[in-house]
Length: 144
Image (cartoon, rainbow, N blue to C red; front, top):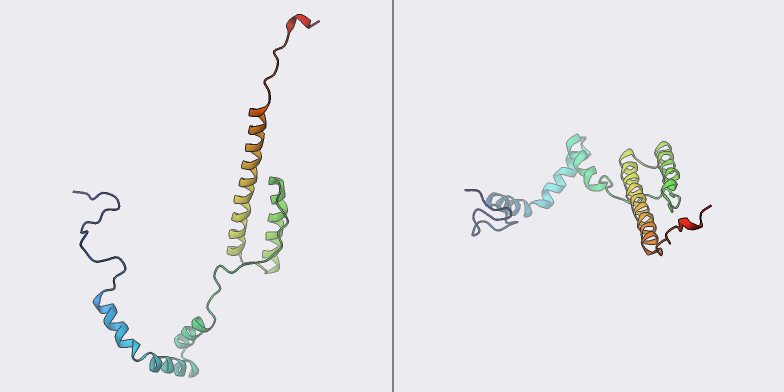
């Protein structure tokens, strides 16, 4: 028998987010020795242990993630303005101001914004057409 989507097989089972016994025991064991372990890690790093150095550096200078970037994109008021924005993004990558990953994310933002501008323009044109008074039929009797 299959369970319904979102329904647990054992509703009275283990609560979400609970930790298992081994994890709790290890955390308790390490908690009392955290300072000594940290001291040993620093000592190993100072003596040239590459793995210890890597761990220390990851804690001291973690890789930046999702930090704002300022490359001065031109305003985008119509879809054709996205070309200048794409040129600014490419120039920033070429100058080393943006990584390829950051550029791809920024290009995606520009694309979403351009689609929103296009949708707004379409909606405005449609509303104008719908609100226009109906045309008067041609009177063929007045034609030459």
